[in-house]
Image 1 (tube, rainbow, N blue to C red):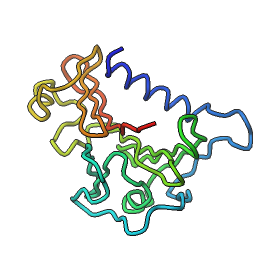
Image 2 (spheres, rainbow, N blue to C red):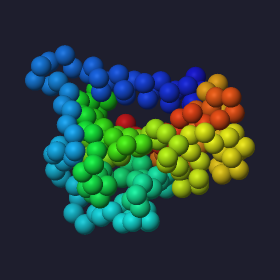
Image 3 (tube, rainbow, N blue to C red):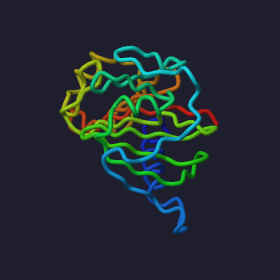
Image 4 (tube, rainbow, N blue to C red):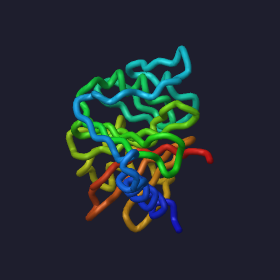
Length: 192
């Protein structure tokens, strides 16, 4: 199975897991608005989010920048979410893939997902929902095949639905339809 199809299957599985991981009433998903959700404790001391730099990431990975805040894949999430502010819709559900909760923060046109490992939340994925936001290279929903290739090159996995570029412990996916981008997702590659 090629990487693109695998990434789409993984994204679908993650969405399904968030929605239906557990049937117990005690572990039902929680949905809050406006940043009222509590953050996981235990982030390592001294880590911070800086604007315009990749200060939170210890590995070479794709970084999405939103409102001047860098969001590297696999970076500790708490300071990033705090820096992005309270203007988000929040959803959480018990994780079927990791310990703790899978968390989803929706900031208008951007969705940030996190996973928990050893009591710390990390960035799992960032999805761009519409053409009002773009990658740092200027690619947005509606960009052409030629624009994606000019921005990211031809070293990529190609599948039926689009392209996947891998960097370090992350990948960047573009779903293409009729020569135009219809979906953009940054995804962390998480070691078992």
